Length: 426
Image 1 (cartoon, helix red, strand yellow):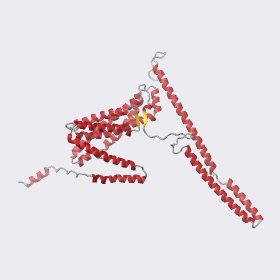
Image 2 (cartoon, one colour):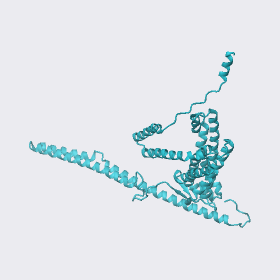
Image 3 (cartoon, helix red, strand yellow):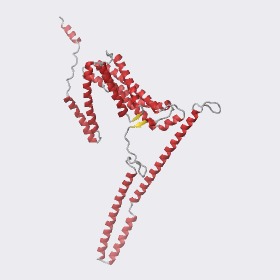
Image 4 (cartoon, one colour):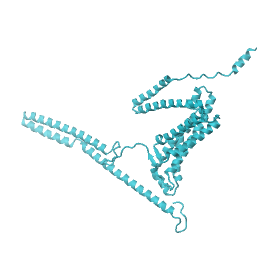
């Protein structure tokens, strides 16, 4: 047989499958944990104060992933739809509680219900379309495909919803006067809340859009990396990742829009009023005990701190002045006594010189005590006037807002006016 035939057949033979990586054990994890120790060392070196958080986060990661591994193994082996449904419900419940109580700085009324409805709708709809149609899994709830997909969708959707809710409730609290002005001039609650909702959705979806833009150009995603390291072909890994990132983008968008719209219709009531009493700030605030100067004790430079610092400076300056005066007096007395023993004329000259030096010390040397005292008094007066002016401005704004609401209710409540024309917009 022609040798060239064997060469041709050798060229067209398929490449051998890639070798699977060796099995990993806890010693490999222990080696990787030294990287966390380096982070703790750097935190101590720079005084970041993150040592406790790093240890707690690393411990939670180890424990949670280990428990998840023991749970997933029997679910994957049995492939029971009941186990898949129970595990999915557990993951969704944890995500809802995380969004409602840990990830957001603000909470509104009925937040658990609205977040639950938004998350369930977004994740279940997207996971069904992706697994049943895009991945072509048979059955579509096959655990080895469905559970990891739901986990990644929940993680990204949870982050997007938390950012969106934080943004819309924070903007509503910061821009209260502007929103109430729009409402007082006849704007509906959607017209007043639309800028807040748009800004919140844009901010929440920005990380997903950035990740999608640089994927494959700068970063290699986690699912693609895992499949390649697990021995899958490059083409399958690429296509799986493309489908997954589209599912993540869709679920994050649906969940964020649903949760932000629900928040909008809760913090604005049916009478087109902004209800900030339905928003609670979950951040810890220092106790606001007022001082005589009108500033809070929690401030780093309040009235008490200023007075203590000024008193300490005055005490040091007065001590230095007293020391200098006592030294000058002692030196003058010594000079006078030694001079008196020699002659009367020399004693008179020394006394005149001492008197001249004391006058120069009192009149010619700059005295900082009076200057610091004047500056301290001016600062206290300015702080008091600024506080009074701020209180007056807030009081006037509150009265103006109340008058605008009363005017709106009066005008919108009247069905017709004297000339017969309907008033639609104030």
